[in-house]
Image (tube, rainbow, N blue to C red; front, top):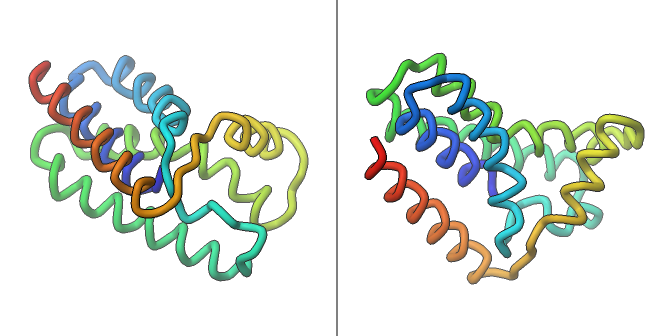
Amino acid sequence: MTATAHALIGGAIAAAVPDPKLGITLSAISHPLADMIPHWDFGLGWKKKSKALLFFESFADLAFGVIITFLLFGNMTDRTYLLVCIFMSESWDILQMPYLLFNWKFFPFSAFYEFGHQTNGKAKMPWGILTQAATVTGLVLVLRTIH
């Protein structure tokens, strides 16, 4: 999934789950579970992209996701807690970046890359964005009923 989708999921969890221990844990677990749903993201086709382009696309996606998440959920929960949940929901992809950008093919980066490579559901555009939008929207709606 895009970093924006993961950030929104982490933010929705932070807003719905007042206990930080549970919310942070759920945010971390949400990443591989969400990635199993067929989706499109900027990392698809990474071998054909320059490292600069991959970094720029990934960073822009991450920044956009954090900004949107703070706009939507920043008034609903402690902002530090929100930021930690966003970070934890993104951490699986962040830990793949040294593998992708610097060719660091050793633990832990190789393990996160291999796990993501094996478990990521892939879908082409536009379906890969639609599956993310539906997943994030559904999860946010479910979590809002809990809160």
